[in-house]
Length: 373
Length: 248
Image 1 (cartoon, rainbow over the protein chains, first blue to last red):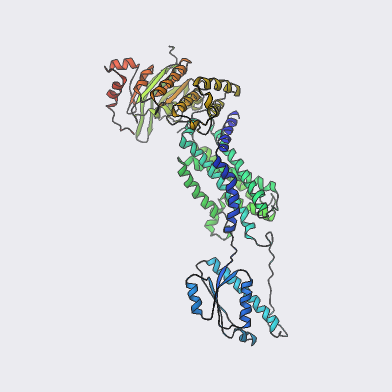
Image 2 (image 1 turned 90 degrees about the vertical axis):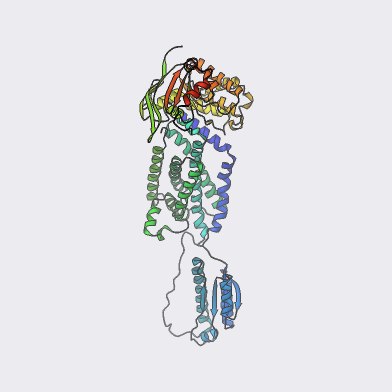
C-alpha cells in the first residue's frame, strides 16, 4: 500500500505539472460538447428547391407559400420551364425540383385531381429522402386544406380515412441534440481515458523509465493500479463536467434517471476502457504505435457503438461486433438513464456485461505486462 | 578485501532465436568490489547485465545475485540491487527531491529516512539551489550524478551501471567516479560497463566480453602484463580485433 501511495503521488504530480494535459481535461470536453452536437444533427434544413410553375394560379402560389413557410426549404429559383430549373439542378445549385403542371388549379377545382412532379438529387440520400418526405407532407396538408375549404363536401366520405397521430415520448420535441449530447459525452470520456492511459505508459517505455521501474520491487499490479487510478479520476471528472456542466447549462438536459445508477455504471465502464488502454500500451513500444492502435479501436468502438446509427439496423454480423463493444453499452445506458429515466434494475444486464469486460480487459493487460523478458 | 561472493554465474547463456547473445559466461564478483564489464558494442554486455538484474530470464546456466536465484527469485534480487541504465532513467518532469523521494519510497524507506538522506545527498552533491528545478532542466552530468545517487539511495548490496558516463566531459566523469568509490567504500558492490579505458583502469577487476563470451578476467595491471600492453586501450584492441560480430 505504501508503494502504491508513492506511485500515485508521482503520477498526480506529473499529470498536474503538465499544462497541456490539464487543458485537454478541461477545455477539450467543453469545446467538443459545444461544437459536435451542432454537426451531429440529422434535422435537415435549408433544402434548396427549384420551382417550375406552369400554372401561376392562386393555388400554386399558396402551395409555394406553404413550402417556404415550413422553414425547411429555401427557394433557389422560380421559373416557367423545367429545362431552366434542371440546369440549376445540374450545377448543384438546387437539391430538388418541384414542377407544378398547367391547369393545376382548374383540375383541382373540377375535382379531376392533379399531379405534381418532384425531382431529387439523391447524391446525399438522406437529404433527398427527408426532403421528399417533407415536401409530400406539405402537399398532402395543402390538399386536405383546399378540399375542406373550397370543394363541396361529399355527403358520405368515399373512404374512411385513418389518421395516424404519433406521440413522441422521452424526447417530445424530437431534438437530436438531446439524443446526441449524452452519446458524445460517452465518446469523449472513452477517448480521453483510454488514449491518455495508453500514451502515459508507452511514454515511460520510450523514455526508459519503465526499465527503472521493472528493476525495482514494485509489483505489476501496483504499477498498473497507479496508472489506472489517476485516469479513472480524470474520466469521472470529465463526465461530470460534461453532464452537470455543459449538458445541463447549455442544452438544458437534466438526467431523468438516478445519477447514482449512471455513476455506478460509469465507474465500472471506465475500468473497462482503461483496461483497453493498458492492453494497447503493453503491445506498443512507441507512442506512435499506441496512437495508431488506439485510433483504430476508437473508430470501431464509436462508429459501431450506436452513436450515429442505431445498432438494431446494422447487419447481423455487425450487431455481434457491437455486442462486444463496451462503448455501445454505455451509450445505450446513458441514453436510457438520462432521457428515459431507466433504473438500475432496467440496466442490470448492461452492468453485468460491462463488469465482465472490465475484468477481462484488465486481466489480459496485467497478464501481458511483463517485468521480465 | 573480504571474499564474500555477491554475484556468481555458471555457464550463463541467453539466446534470441538462433542468435546466441550471451554464451556460457562464468564469473564471480566479490562484495565491495568495483567490477568492470568491458566489451565492444554488441558483445552482449547489456544482455548479460539485464539477466543479472532479473530483467531478462536466462536461456540456460546458473546465476545467483546477492544469494538469490535469477530464475526463481527475481523479485528478491530487485530488492537488493540498484540499477542505472545508459538511457537516463529519472523522471524529467519531477524535481530532484521528488525523484529521490519516489525511488526511496518504492524501496520501502520511511518518509523520515528519505528526508534525512535526501538532505544529506543534496548537500553532498552541492545542488541546494537545484532541488526545486525539474530534473529535465539540469545538465547531463548532473542528471547522471543524481541517477547514480538515486540508484544507491536505498543502500543496495550491488549497483549495476550500464555505461553511466556516456556523453559527459572528463571532469564530470572523474567526479562521477569519486561517487562510485565512495559507494564501494560503503560496501556496495559496483558492477559497471564502460567504453572508456581510463575508467577501466579505475576498476578492481575487469572482464572482457567478445562475441558473447568472456575472453579475459583479471585486474587491470595483470591484464596489461598478460598482453604486454602499456595501456588498457591496447588490451582492448588486442582482444576486440578477434571479434566476429559486427557492432550494432
